[in-house]
Image (cartoon, rainbow over all chains, first blue to last red; front, side, top):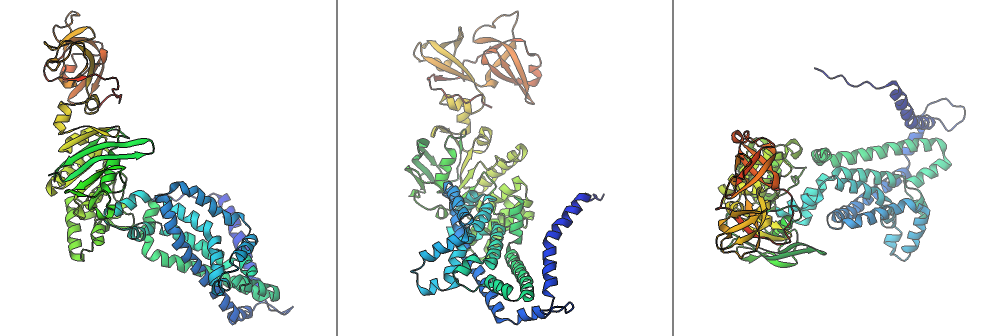
Length: 269
Length: 363
């Protein structure tokens, strides 16, 4: 006997359409805008704005910079926070509320205040660090990503029995590192992926810190184009949107490749 | 020489003395159950043996070698936990194989050993299933196979059956014993279920308040408890407060009635004692014309009857409990006047102290 699928209420369709409209209308408007020519009175449509973006060296340079920065931030954050949060759950559970409070600080302190503080703090640092986006800016982004990393990973650790899994692994002869990489990490993979997505999205769109620290990242380039050339800015916005989504999708595919079953099981617990 | 030895183990958590000096000596291939109520220190003792915790004082020795300071991953102890502890990202086969991989065993010997163990626990067909695809009982079987795969020196089981339903629990405990005997592995088993401990162990250690109250064979623990706590905790026991009125003749007085108890001989007159009688040792008869039934009997009235299958448990006034065949119990309905024959022999007598623990009614 087939079980009839529950029917959606008519009001649900209305809310769904409203929700979809909220996201899609700006995208459509941007698309329509990006297809216009930079000459008044000419008819729609042209792909010349997209051509301008694709052939612009600054576009490729800045998007590469931002993407590499995002990856660097993700890697540093995971290396820093996964073992830390694991240890806190395992040995120092009383510290958890303290770290959760600290994780809220980047939300509370405005980026402009944070960047001024960071610039003063690292003023005397070596040039290769202070003057490089992969040094100073990556540090700032790790701080900025802290709350997203912490709360995602914390939820992941809370969904598994960290103590029992660790002790079971140890009793079978595994060292800490083996336990972390072969037992714990595969079971918090979905949480680590979620944290990575959020970090990627934040870094790809971060403007204030990069601007004040005078680094030419993708959002800075986007802002520059937006101020100087209206129609290509539309094309650039859409392209950046697509590239960011493609990057997230590839992260998802890479992350899910080996851990899909584990993530599914961890989710089923 | 003892194989596993715990010497004067102390473990304090702040002011709480979880273990207050326990000594255990276990021979190779023996099965010891640590039995006691929650908070008695049994799991703490097991964790000290596993190496997950360090004692404040005392030593753990295996084959005469002190392993108190050895890390848990270097102790060669197989452990089965109370909580389901299979690695969720691995199949049953991969779980069992994990410890062998850590030990660098080659693929063919690993595979052979894993199949042997899955066969041993009756899950040869379930090797490719993930933990969430297995029932609780199956998960604990895999956990047992995983612990045994590394050929541990000691097998540690921390209430492995407590999360399972009654039928599976009985089935699995028998399998644990069968496997333990088959492999001859020294085993330390923690449980709060006295029936479980008595059914499968070579030795039982009853713990209370961080110390071992008594250690012995299941039969000794049942028939000759040495402390009131053990008497109360192992099985159900009638506890009758009395005092010795004639130490030479072996007579005590309970509730104004003189009883002749062999165990009272040689005791000091006036000594306060506790008479311990198993419910099955109390012989009940219907009172004739309200009489008290003669020597060594106690008069009472049936208060409740509990049907337990082949036997029925009768609770009577004066706190008496008796088990008798269901067929005979039907002749003694609730409200019936009865006389309970107290056997002179085979009854335990303990000196009564004021710090008698109250753990409620035994089961």
